[in-house]
Length: 215
Image 1 (cartoon, rainbow, N blue to C red):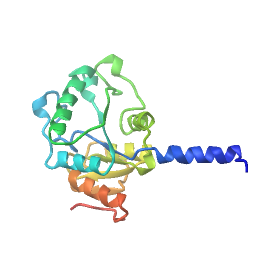
Image 2 (cartoon, rainbow, N blue to C red; image 1 turned 120 degrees about the vertical axis):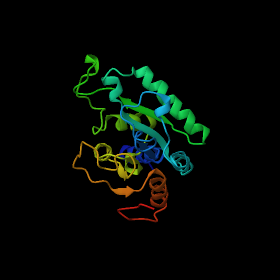
Image 3 (cartoon, rainbow, N blue to C red; image 1 turned 60 degrees about the horizontal axis):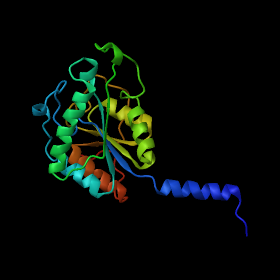
Image 4 (spheres, rainbow, N blue to C red; image 1 turned 135 degrees about the horizontal axis):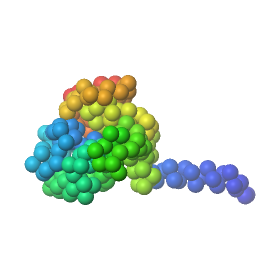
């Protein structure tokens, strides 16, 4: 018996969907490290309690992990993009030393009012726009419907919602009291990154349908 082209197409689509990864997108400042205004040197990268363990847990659960971060230090001329990469490498090494792996790091150097002219633009990548998340999804074959964004600001929440992922607002850093105050409600609220990781673990096993999770 023959198989119609339409049936073959549906079969291929199912196979592609089955091979897409689940991911957790993470804000950096205020979520993984302590909130510091325009961090520019390694001494300012101070891991929040339990952050490395939480990322390790997410990796154990099988999630691809990616940091998604706006970096106005570039737009202001404080650091070059290369300087941001070097700073991020320090953070990644500190996490790796604790068994916590980060698979990808995306940052946006732009700002509509940038001091450095070439970075003065309204772009698709600066949160709350979803550009960095969507680029990561394309490059790493991520299933956004099964993915999460964890952050401490309404900017993070809106970016996640714009990308079509579930969002978790943590009470560290700005804790949702950020200066932007976008009208975006998170899917879940957690005390911190470790609590968010535990929540994701429960959700991935179908054990929780709560709106708020702060343990």
